[in-house]
Image (cartoon, rainbow, N blue to C red; front, side):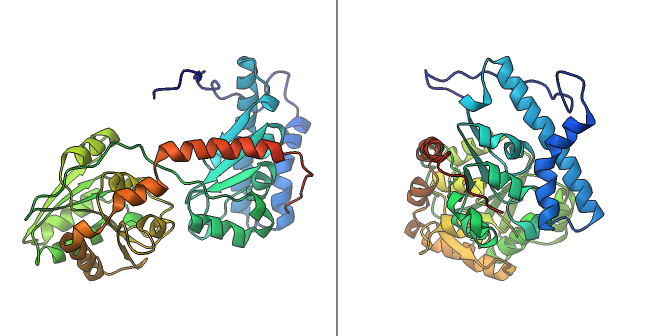
Length: 368
């Protein structure tokens, strides 16, 4: 990635360290490090089974190892934790060391997306209390995620700020040619993504308007998708299953190929990068109303057609035909410029991190 002249990439923080580093580890040291994570969970009563306790303990050990890796790595580079801004991209796994280190940094912020946010989907998510208590800002990637967090953790509301993800501007794609309707989808082929429903909906739509469907991505259900397509006639619909393709190749395809619409029928999403990428090229969207998808499409459907969270194939077919017929009436690129241009979003993230530093020591508040 090209870096500004005043930025130096110093490499990774180093290989994973043992549970404790330096002097010989003692049981008391390990317990002292685990305590800030485990005790709030137990006190809050969120660990309700032996399996959840095991998940919590194993996750805590990973967080401790990660925290030590950060400190040892910074020391290797001649830096102190107190002199750095810390940014956790996920609210689980790699972001969890901030639950142990966040208070000692200049400022610490953590993002949350989908599986690290929505508890009814993921189930028990360890150490949200410890993490939220230790960082200065919690950054959901959508207003939907913002509302979700504030409703469930009202005492953390003052720390929750929507900070969207974005994609790089590579310009508009070519306009579709009259008489050719090319529909693209891009996802893993797994139950969550409902790719077979995309096939069924386009099979229905193609009875009215000939369609070329191109799907990027494979997965556990790829073979069964191939069997489904082979088993059913689909007059008017040509199918191109491209399998797993490097992201850059997909973006080059968008840049050089006229595309009528992009379809995503997922059961659950945060704010899909695949949709943002398509919008950046001026491609209208047909998608389900899950997670932050509605925010991308706009209150008046500027970017495309929003389906119910659990649509029928017929409903999806009608939406696709609407985009085919009214494509010029949508403005996905303008909506992308407003919400998902990574250049603007990155500078906004830096401003938030710097601003959090100035508020860090203005009276500690217990959240839980």
